[in-house]
Length: 447
Ligand code: PLZ
Image 1: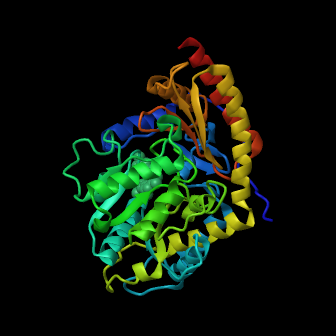
Image 2 (image 1 turned 90 degrees about the vertical axis):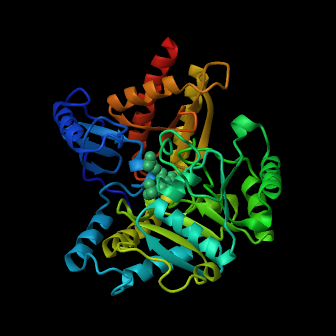
Image 3 (image 1 turned 90 degrees about the horizontal axis):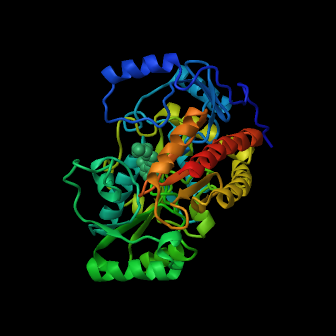
């Protein structure tokens, strides 16, 4: 098995208060140059990263528990990925697969066809971002079924383009004042065991009943869902919810799309979260972890669906760029050689045992959930399930300022999520958790 080697010292090292003077200078320049609509979670500006650390312009070394939103599972400067990128860039950066095609695209497609759940005949098409993959999965489903309606779920996040905004559930900050939105999108209740108290079959029956009554199964082209809802709050559906929905979709000729943009590529302890659920999606959307940080996205799925599209119906200038494909091949090889799915499962054990103790000590953690290296805590007012978004933001900000990059999420803004690089060392993960824990103990105590 490939041993994980680090180039940078794997340590939290603060040499200035955060943000340091150089980060503050960049923040001032940014204010005059970059559109205000783009936010950033941490106040520091990065120059270097490796394994579980990010080094900023002032020389501070921060613990990374975000992986650039679940992207750099193999590390943000994985040596195999970096070498593959450099080698490919020295030979051929771009021709456009729609003009003069090349082998790397085909190789990525072959790998995804093999790696994704199910041993049926599959095809793959490559894009640049998760949103673009989702848009195209919907295009394929509509064309192949001749139907228009698309079902998405409460708490869903599928992107920021017009169609994917419509699929995304949360108005602020993603949708407010950005309409009008794409038509023929219907939202149904998802399974949120901590809050709805339903078992998987009950939650599925409720959603199915509403779809049948409000839309009619025969009008539905596709049903799209994240197997663990990411931005919506790391919501793991109750067991049985997804298999029931998938069976019903199959019986009704509805294309089941698993959006694995955030959950894919070893993050949950399997190659895909669909594997954990024992479901075989008709189409699966991927991005983020696929290429070690290079922009690449994919739709993989049933050959009969993807081959239904007329030649020229799918594409894009940069989709499946040669450098991104070389990175993906190197990243996927590395994930297998270093057995990153097993590492993700191990990181889950470490995180849960720490967080369970923190839950008992603080009384503000309503729920600990997630799978693999995708674990979150839901922060509530003590003794209730009332979301505490204020405390959540305070804790995240203070944790970032103490040199540990953490992200928040959730429909109610009260989730702190942990998405460490899968290559993070155990000691560094534990230190990151301890910093988060001491901030939370402190703030919860004074709340
Ligand atoms: N589907 C499940 O998680 C991206 C977005 C963060 P893109 N999630 C992080 C933000 O605030 O923009 C995501 C996802 C799922 C689709 C997407 C969209 O992927 O590569 O950001 O377009």
